[in-house]
Length: 236
Ligand SMILES: Nc1ncnc2c1ncn2[C@@H]1O[C@H](COP(=O)(O)OP(=O)(O)O)[C@@H](O)[C@H]1O
Ligand SMILES: [Mg+2]
Image (cartoon, rainbow, N blue to C red):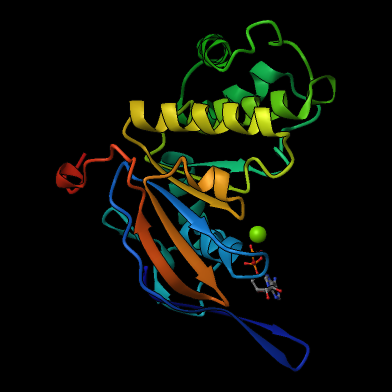
């Protein structure tokens, strides 16, 4: 992110949600965007993922400047390169667990049988082998979020964005969910950008970037992190 600025206009008022953000996240890093409510975390994530256009500045993912892409180009880019995990899970209510997880593979030209076989395998990996045909309403919050994680990671996108993924979960389930995301991201060398206001969750990241009133006020490496920055500059 280069000189990123986001201003929202509300009636005659302006809210500077992001002041002037410069931030580089190396490939494969688990980066936590940390801060209190209203500090600009979601705004930053939405600009990074191309969900919203910045007021000023630019966002680059790999070689692509996503800030200049059209909505159509962005939609294709997101399908190919980006996964999302949401606080409220955002599963499609009329689809089963398997069908929800298989969704991202629809865009890669994989046939239905193969998509669902891959989705079943993914659900087994998140401990939901016995819930394949369940609908979201038939699962607990923690189970729904595990479906959400399986869906975000199934197509092995280079970057996964997660906005308060543990925000609605109890403390035991939070740990399970964070551990799962960490394991997947490490295994496939995916970049994970995680928004949270929970310091226990921040401990799972390699790095914690703290926001306050739309400014980065600190940027620290977690001492226990095993992330090797030395080889992070390799192209894929
Ligand atoms: N769509 C919007 N319109 C106007 N103001 C917004 C909008 N989205 C966020 N804001 C404002 O921008 C600031 C940052 O919000 P947000 O990024 O949601 O914070 P966080 O995710 O850290 O809680 C807040 O003051 C919020 O009220
Ligand atoms: Mg938020």
